[in-house]
Structures are given as structure tokens and as C-alpha cells.
Image (cartoon, rainbow, N blue to C red; front, side):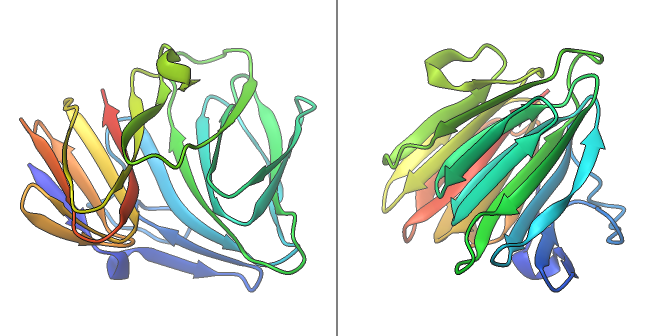
Length: 226
């Protein structure tokens, strides 16, 4: 089974310094049909205005994946991490027993655009840790997060895989699992016969095959989930 949430149907919050669009129920936005899928609870697209920061927050037992699409993000946390990441970068904060962290737009001139995905870990009470890497600008589909850290992917405490895809006028198959989640942030994409536009998301439940075809330059992310 496949479900689609269009970009225009996402939740929206505007705080002056932060604009956020929510695929799943988050904050004051509630959609009973979109509460998450499997262990994926949050999928937000955030725009941080120049110099702005998301207020410090402390979380435990959560895997927080951030994708910096455009701009410069300064991440600081109670583990002692202070990391500046520019566009097309990936970070994974495993909050474990509890970690306070801040995400800040390090530029006073340009907007920071980032995605955040929050995932419940397989085990609770683990030691917190931080990881990051630069994303490759390569045509095709690449593994970027996994439970075993293979192929230079970041290692997460859950039985899932996260892939990035960059396609143009080519078709690719994706790995299938009991559940899947796809988010398109750029271009136009055909997935199993359905056309997605930038900002659209797709959920998969027991889908036997997933086929992508880039119509224009299509870029996004795909999760296999337990």
C-alpha cells in the first residue's frame, strides 16, 4: 500500500525567525492519519533565518538525523560537540541517556534550509554520540545511514537504512522492507506510477517493488523501516 502527502498538505509553523513544515503530526499540527511510520516519528523541513537558532532542548532515547541542504549550520551539544556543516551535509545525534543540543544558522546573510528526521532507537539508555559526513553529489542511489555503518554510512541504533537519491531521466529500483518512507526535496519524480513534486512525501507498507524515475533533476531521501 502507498500513501502520499502533498507539499501543500503539510503542517506549517512560522515563528518569525523559523519556518517549519511538518509531514507528520508535530507541535500544534495534528493529523491523525500521519502520526509517523514504524519508528520514524518526525519529518520536518526547517528554514532558519540568518543568525537564528533553534532553542536549546534536551532529549533522550531519540536518533536525530539532520540534513543540511543549503546554508551553514552550527551544531553544539552537551557532549562537547561544536561542528559547522555546510550545504549537502549529514549529521546524526544519538541522544541516548540525554543530550542537550542547539542548531544555529551560522550565516548573518543567507537562510539555512535543513531536514530533520527523528527515530525511536532499538534500545534505550545507550551512550550518546554524534556523527557527521559530507554527502556526495553522485548520480544514482547511495546508502548514507545504516544499523551496521557499512559503505561509509553513519551508524544508527535502529534496524533501518537511509538512502539519498539524485536522478535525471533514469530509472532505479529501491530496496524494499515492511515499511518505507520517501521524501522529495527537489525536482519531479515518478514512483510506482505516481508523480511527486518537491515537498511531497510517500509512505510504503508491504510494497513488493519500488521503482523511481527522475523526470527532471530529482533529489530526495528514502528510508527502509522495521
